Length: 574
Image: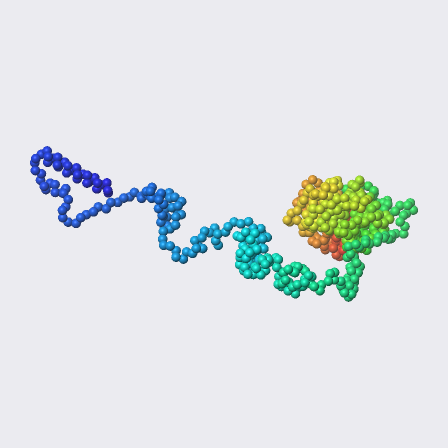
């Protein structure tokens, strides 16, 4: 619009100059009516043309440099302001309520904090002193002048009264009744010896009265009588022979293998085919609640663990000998390879080595912990070494010749329940109350295999298969789990045996000699027999009135199984 008006004005100016030229050139007179529309009006209202500028306003350089203040309500800036312009204070009236404290610089919400290096203990000491007594040292004052009253803040009079002592140096007033050995009340700071100081009338080494001494003597005597004394001596060992003669007319003891039982017990022949037992053929009475153990290499005898009774399996099936030597129940026993010696572990914290033929106790071992299981090393050159799983989470290895501990395997997190040698006796597997299974190299105290899953339960009974390839573990979730006993020790998920109730009981598992069946007792006193290939429950026999704690398949018989129950009976099935 402005450009249009300017052009009109310039056009009118050019016309005037042309008229002047024409008038100068030609003397003719011009008609005034012809030029009337070009002359401005001399009368009437004056008209003004409004100029519209559509270009944006741009700040002048001088205005930017001088620091023009920005409107706080402005939401868009058309130029690049400086830092001072952006953060310049707003224009307006002075705050009449602005105090000196508000005007002071602040680097935190409560004011301005200066950096200082104070010991944590000193800071806590002064903080507690200030909250208790109302005064504290002024950190801004030099430490050399802290003896003056100006070195304290807060209750200065109280600081002078207490001589500037801190809360840790002044005795608490609640101990007013406590007298001190050196005299003085608790308010007397100089004589205060602390909250544990003795009373004035308190004597050193106060002795009990006669009546109290009698009571203490009675309690000590009862504890010693009940065997609670740590220095309790081991029980006296003795043996009872129940047969008429220990030797026959040829000078052979009861350990001699019988030749008239129909099978050759000297050889390690395994039956070609095993069959299910169907009927009970004999009952041994006299033991209590613990499983039997067959005589190694020559299974014509078996030893019941609870009372250490040695029984015959064939012929008259008599009780041959009783071994007495533990003051508490026997937990586990283990024969050596030849059966001439066996080790017993009991709750009296002793392990004892016995001579099977004579019944003599050869040696004793203890580390003041309860042994839960014991095993000889099956190697012929290591028959003097044995390991025991203890209640203190350790597996302790002893040398029977010297009676000394030669190795400790300390990795379990609970009491050790079982120890089983695998892989040609180079390794052994242990299970524990910590619901884990660990594999150890012999004489190396670090486990090289650790098996523990969230779904696993404790496995208090483990048995090695006759071919040495599998481990049958009685799990507390009413299952028998099968682990590989070579190399990887993985769980065989295709071999899980179910259908029995054993939760809470360490029921022993066993295999038939030909690996056709798996047998186990249960909490209902039943003998359960599974097929190895299909894992189906083939047969179930009501064997005992109470818990059937163990089931053993005779290693040289096709169908003979020995069961043991908590009803005090050991039964032979065929």
